[in-house]
View 1 (cartoon, one colour):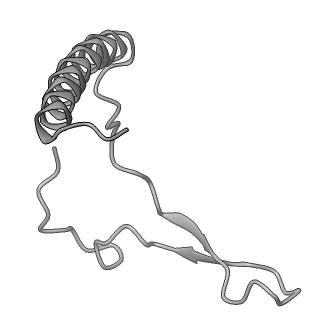
View 2 (spheres, one colour):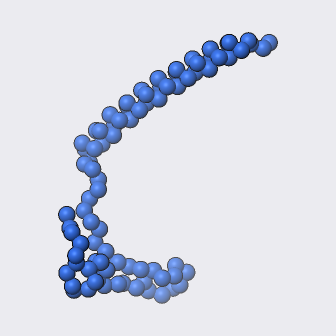
View 3 (tube, helix red, strand yellow):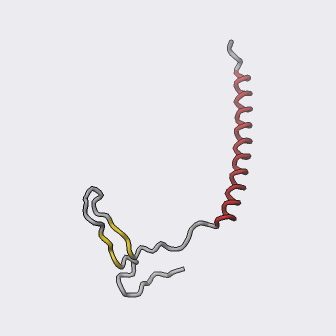
Length: 86
């Protein structure tokens, strides 16, 4: 038994309205959850990462010790940096 075109159109519209309504409800609940997490933990950005003693592994397959590079702070050694810090 095949339904006429207007039945399919009506079912499509009902599905569209239901999906839209459900998405807005889900979005509102998720937004409330995100606000609660923000209040609990803050923005989560943290400060700048200290890479002054970064460990660089040249080849993951090699058995040699990793190389520790000193002074990778972006300032070019002991010279003062022109970067603005926050």
